[in-house]
Image (cartoon, rainbow, N blue to C red; front, side, top):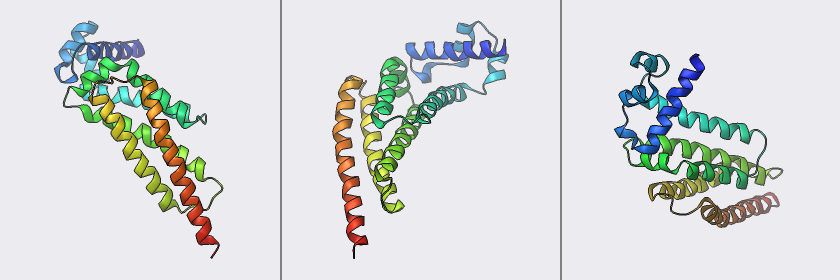
Length: 191
């Protein structure tokens, strides 16, 4: 029973997020829509912010689970874009609220995880200083995060496929950057 009640609260909250901005949703809205009492809600969550954080935590766990199976960056970003686009109403309603930072934090962590994995695979077997690797990851991470933030804030007018095509161009630059860092390190080692 406890799991199904928690799921009910979770699903009810997602349904409400499809209908209105996060800032307009109250615990009262959730308990009335779920047909439960306030104490039941507070048994599982301290407030709706904790519930929102759980939504992103669940999605992040799915991403990590997929990541642990060794996926490629293209599949990873495609999944991130597809999840975002399929929850467009929810994301638009979060963007329309003062709690947008929860979405940004999720997106920020997810994109960094994907880039970290990808860049480390590119430099595998090469003697590139970790400081250089970290800088490359950071540089492209902020570029990707900025693009995703802009896509979210402008209502996701482009399809995931269109955004992914743009990311593919960006990742060609990333590969060139890593190749140049490897060459530079090889040149330094030859002296």
